[in-house]
Length: 444
Image (cartoon, rainbow, N blue to C red):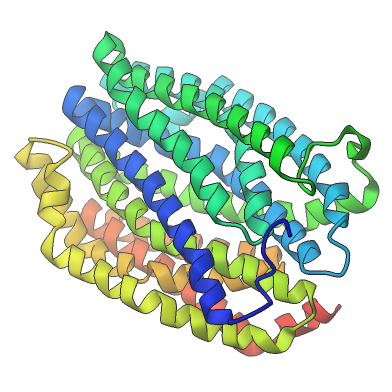
C-alpha cells in the first residue's frame, strides 16, 4: 500500500517511527542553515552575516505563503488518505500543485520588485544594502521552484511516509552545503550562497518530479484533474488563507525584531542573526512534533476516531520530554561555543551570549508550543491558529517596543518579548484543546 495508515497498530510506536525521519529531515535542514551561516560568517565576514540576517524576514514572507500551502496539503491529503476512498486524493493533488506554482511565482516576483522597500523598512545598514538586495533576488528566484518541490514532499508525508521526504529534502540540503563554499570561493561572496541555494532548489524539484511520476499513483501530476473547481477552492481558502495570515503575523513580528537589532548596528544585527540560527536549530524539534501531530490527528479525524485524539496528545508530551531537557542543557553548556563558530569577533560573541541569557528560556518552550499548534492544525482550524499567532505577535510587539522605548535596552526587549510570544501561544492553544470546542468543528 502506498503510504502508511497511522491509525492502525500501536499509536505511540507509529508516532515515534513517523517522527524520527521528520526530526532527521529538519535537523539536516537546520544544519544547512547553520553551515550556510558559518561559510558566510567565516568567508565573507560579519557584514555577510548581517546581510543574510536582514534578508531572512523577507524570505520568511515567501516561507509563510509556502507554509500555508504545506498545511493545506497535509490536512487535505491526510484526511482523505485514512478515509474509505483514497482515490479522492488524485482529484485534489494536481490542483494543489497548480496553486503552489502560481503562488510561488506571484510571491517571489512581488518580493523581488519590492525588495528595496522591505530593506529600508528593516532599517538595513547602508553598508550591506546592495549585497542584501542581490542575495534576495537570486534566492527568491530559486524559491519559485521550491514551492512546487515542497508541496510534493508534504503530499508524500501526509500519506504517512516520512522516510521518502527525508531522502528528497536531504538531497537538496547536501547539494546546497556542497555548493555554498564553492560559489563563495569563486568570488561571489554572499551572492554565491544565494546561487547555491537556487541551484539546489531547481535540482530538488527535478528529483521530486521524477519520484512521484515513477513511484506513486495517488500523488502524480495528472492533467485530467487540472481543473480548479468550486468545492476545491472553497476548501483551500478555508484552510490556507487563515494559515497565511497567521504566518504573516509572525513574520511581521520577526521584522520588528530585526529592526530593533539593527539599532545596534552591524554588530547587533550579526549577534541577533547568530542567536536566530540557534533558535532555528531548536525549531528542528518543534516543527517535527508539529508536522507529526498535524498529520496523525488529521488521519484519525479522517477515520472519525475522535476518542483517540487525547491519547495522541499524551504521547506527544512523552515524545517532547527528552528533547526539551536536551535544549536546556545545550543552552547552559554550549552557548559560547555555538556563537564562536560563526565569527572571531569577541564583541559579536559577547553580545550574542548576553542576548541568549535572556531569550534562552523562550527556546526551551518551543517543543510544547509546536505540539499544541500541531493539534490545532490537525483539526483543520486554521482560523484559530491565525487568532492565536496574531495574539502572540501583538503581545510580543507591545512588550518589545515598550521595553525598548522606556529602557533603551534592545537585547532585554527582544528576549522578554519573544518569551511572551511563546507563553501566549501555549496558553491559547492549550485553552482551545481543553475547552473541547474543537469537537463541534470536527463533527460538523
